[in-house]
Structure formats: C-alpha cells, structure tokens
Amino acid sequence: MARTSLTPLPHAAAPGTIAREARTLAEQYREVRDATVALCSPLATEDYVVQSMPDASPAKWHLAHTSWFFEEFVLQRAATPYEFHDPDFRFLFNSYYNAVGPMHTRSSRGMLSRPTVQQVLDYRARVDERMSELLHDTGELPADLVPIITLGLHHEQQHQELIVTDIKHLFSCNPLLPAYIHKDPLPSRAAPALAFRNFDGGLVSVGHAGPEFCFDNEQPRHRVYLAPFALATRPVTNAEYLEFIRDNGYANPALWLSDGWAIVQRETWTRPIYWSESLEEEFTLRGLIPLDPHAPVAHLSCYEADAFARWAGARLPTEFEWEHAASAAAVPTSGNFVESGNWHPVTAAHPTLAWQGHTEPAPLLQMFGDVWEWTQSAYSPYPGYRTAAGALGEYNGKFMVNQLVLRGGSCATPRNHIRTTYRNFFNPAARWQFSGVRLARDL
Image (cartoon, rainbow, N blue to C red; front, side):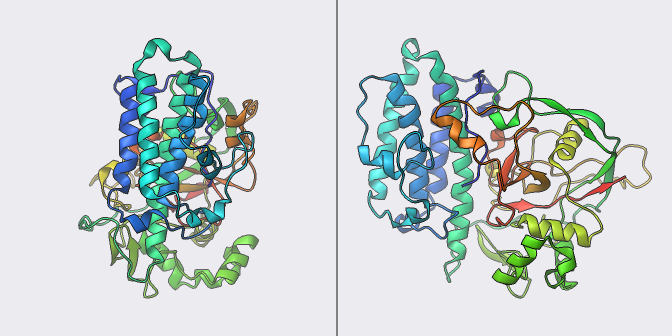
C-alpha cells in the first residue's frame, strides 16, 4: 500500500499540522481516532471484511492496523513489561515491518473473518483506553514518544483516505453498485476556461523547512534548477478527457509509454475505471450518477494521465515545478477535502474575470483537494536523505523505486493532513485513488 513516509523526524512539532489551533496531543489523538470510526459508520458488518483486490484492504484491517501501530510503537515502549492485547494481532495486523516480525500475507487480508469486526472494535477501544491514560499522564510521557505518537496520527489519516478509496473500489465490484453515502451531488456548473500560468524557473528551493511536522521524504530542503515552464490553471475535466477517448486515445500506441500501452492491451482499458461503457455515467461513493463534464477527471493511472497530456500537446509537470508553482503563487492549502462531505471532485469555483490579456497572472485553482495530481517525477530520495534506524525506518526508504509522485491531496484527504511539500506516491498503473492530471508546458 503506497503511502508517504512514516519515519519520525528529530523535531516533534505535530500540533501545527494535525490541528491548526493549539490543542493537546490527547485532544488531537481523540479527534483522529474518532474520525476513522466515523468513516466506517455507513458500512454494514459484511462490508468491513471483504478485500476487492490485493492493493486494497478491508476496512476491518485498517481499523486494526492503525491500532496496532500505537500498541507496537508507543504503548509497549511506554510500559515494561508490556502485555499485548492479543499476541496474534502482532502478526495479523503488521503491514510490512520486517524488523517487528512476520506478517500475514497482504493479498489475503480479506480471508480474515476472525477476529470479528466486534473484536477489532474492542481492540481499538482497549488501545484508546491505554493511550488516553498515557497522554493524560503527561508527567510520565517520555519525550521521545511524542514524535512517534504524532507520526501515528498522520499515519492514521493516510489510512482514513485508504478506507474511503478501498470501499469505493469494493462497492464498484458489486453488481448492485451500492452507495456508501446517500447524498445528492452538487449542481453542475461550468468549469473555468483552461489557461496556463508562466513561471520563470531558475534555481529554486524545494522541500520542507521549519518546525512543523512533515514526513521524512519531504526533507532535506534543497535547491533544484527549473527551466521556464507553464502550469495549467486547473485540472483536466471529464469533458476534456472524453474528447481524448472519442479521438481513439486508448487505441493510439503513439500516445502511450511502453509499459502503459502493454497494460492497455492486457487489461483492455478503454476509459477511466469507474466510467460506464456508455461514457455517460460514473460510479461514485453516492452510487452511479451522471458524468459531470465540468468536474476534474479522477481515477486515472499515470499512464492515462501521461497519454492525455501527449494528446493535448503538453506534458505532466515535475513534482518540483508543481511545488514551486504552488509556493510562488502563494496558493492556500484549502479546497475540497474529505471534511467537505462531497465524496467526489467538484467543479472549481472561479472568478468571473477573463484572464487572457489581463495584467495579473491567472490564479491556480484546485491545487489542493479534489484529485491528487500525477507528476512525471520518480519517487526517489532528496539529496542528503537518510533512512532512520529501526523498524519505523522501513516504511519509506525501501519504497523509493518504481513509484511516481503525486501532489496536492484529494476529496478523500483530511484537510489538515496536506501541505505544499507533501509527496504521495503510487505505482504508475494505480487507478483506484482519486488521481487526476494538471498539464504543464515548456516555455
């Protein structure tokens, strides 16, 4: 399950990201843990257990694994000797920490009918009880546990997004196409005209700096050289992607990277994963709804995003172009996140001003939220990056191969989890995340 790094950093200034206002670590913990359970509240018991594909995990596993993290990396370090809630859970709900011990096969997580959902919820409650005791007894909380607890909260927020996307994929495999949530979509409105904003490039600084929390893959801050470039002012819409399909984009090998073309042929891709064969509807967390032509296209693999960009006479941005543009344009980290309750990308709100020929540069819309935006950048370490020692160091460094970087967050991302320097990463064939495309051009 590709996610951003979970290795703790030397600093522990977590409250700046988990909560913008000053609150105690105990309050932050309670908020994040409650949010995870709330995301599962629309589910029936049967929904918690099923695994729709190896890349996805059952909701029950997510609930257990996020509790396993706090028991494995916090509670047993805070108390010696420590009695585990159930020693078997150390094996069942370990993800891929080899230093911790063996683990249940990832592709078989859906076979775990036992422990039951109720037993997993009881496990969560017991871990929460122990964590509450630890967090409220600040005199006994070792200072070195604070960054790990902070890390665990951000880790859980990543799993909150995965719960949403994994459930969507699961429900899409059901011939009844059930809805996760019953809510009317927002009224459709016209998307702003696609424009490009120019950036001079040059030697720019990228990566995280400052005392606030970040994952270790966002550091060290360093300088990169960028040639002058232009970035699209909004993501590509469903209507624009539909033109690509109708122009036989999926049948033109000249548009595709070699690996992408092989997958198109092998998997017989002809459209985005959740679009109907008629190209008039798409499956969403609200069930099957009419395709909104003005909303950002979602659930594209990087191969599809790259092929569209070639067809459009453009390219994908690098992750450093994306980050520099967001920083230089002072784009606020606000948008359509999971708290918005839309459960789907929505059309950009935009000024009525026609930007062509205007003296001010065009605003960059929807840089955050709605859809993760693929970049052409390989997920690799920044200069000077070092993998942390111990089991937590396994999480990130060993995945820095065969992945590409996405930026900006999605409609399933918690709002206070994202920032300009945040690096998400997935295999370029992945389609089940809310991933879209923003075009770039050379100048």
